[in-house]
Length: 107
Image 1 (cartoon, rainbow, N blue to C red):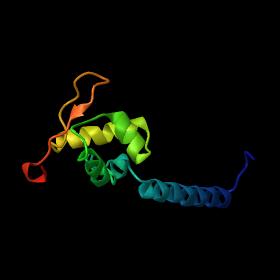
Image 2: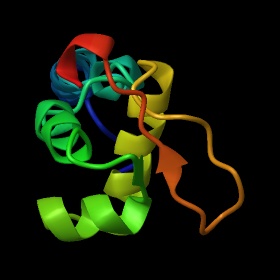
Image 3: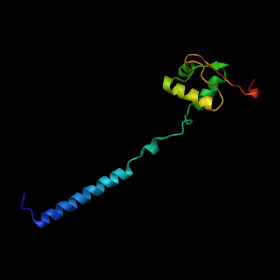
Image 4: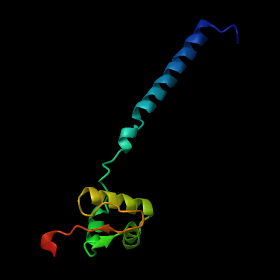
């Protein structure tokens, strides 16, 4: 192995360059973290959540969980989205329902 010829070494270098090119191409095609960042107000259930809460004067995360058959984390995310849209009031303690802001025309 110590006595490799120049041709053998050149062949190894070419093989290594080919491998390096493949790795570089693979890395270039990998999605970056920015590809996974979505709009925090983007949730396909926002419309359904609004329809649910229209029926109440106050709503809780657990109500959304039950009505939409979703987990706590997603229900909490929806509540935060609804708060940012001005549809529900801010959280007032961990277990208290939030006030629903109804449009004047709806009443």
